[in-house]
Length: 367
Image 1 (cartoon, rainbow, N blue to C red):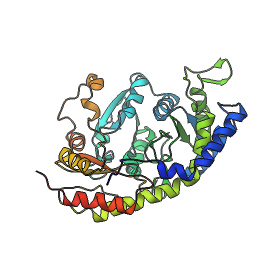
Image 2 (cartoon, rainbow, N blue to C red):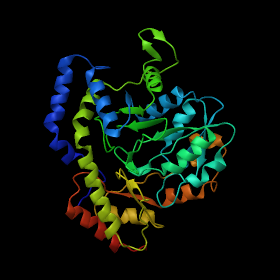
Image 3 (spheres, rainbow, N blue to C red):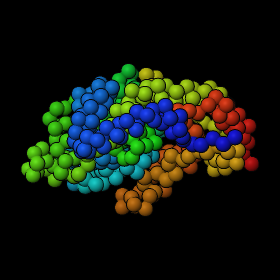
Image 4 (tube, helix red, strand yellow):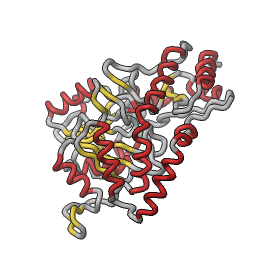
């Protein structure tokens, strides 16, 4: 049996006619940037999340960069981020001239360890970027308490957590802003690059929109040194087709995850923990094992594709050697990077396929 790591076949087959209709209607309209399709999706997505404003942009990295710029963070500032996130979180901080300050994650949830945040705060700290990694919300109550006590801004990196909830409130709606990616592989994915920022602050929303439009609210009048990062009409139209199905797709991911959590019993495998009050959307289902590479090779031989998220922690990338960190500085992030393995997780995974993955993992023994 062959089981891909991810497949869009069932998802896109069910809405294929709607996607073609969205494309044709956009093409016939002859309006491709900043039209009513953008507004329709922005309004629908903000309503879905329970946020006041949504501003579309070009991709998830731009969503973070524009958020940081609009909040006035820049050269000389420090921004706290988890040590085990995708590099885009760090790049956004670097792009605006600030310095990323890394904090270890929790081993059980893979999210930033809120108990370690305060030790990383200095007089230069301006913000915290909690990442809702793998689609499981970070522990936002203590993070917000720390931020409020120290007067810090909070930018939620929600690139992997569309529809996830923390104590019944949507991930991305706790901080000053929430930054989303609609990369095709996300739970809510466009058919190309796309992103968005959500906020409850009307003045900030206005500035964010201008910042992504060359720093301009009015054509040829530029108040800020902005950038060109706007959600195009075609991707907005595709996203509007997909959004009504997101809860159904997420619920199926939860069903698959619950089977993994309850039926994978191999003692060599460490399963993720879901903390109280959290409703994950399982963008990635990440297990850990000391023999990660051996298990990965074994599963590939049985036709089961897997992934690694992420094989190199931020501080060990060549790109970030200027931060001055070395091997051993973040042992938990380093351990996760060498033991994490991501299992197949997508809408359309059949029960027979799930059975095969579970049975194969349970039968595995390290050499």
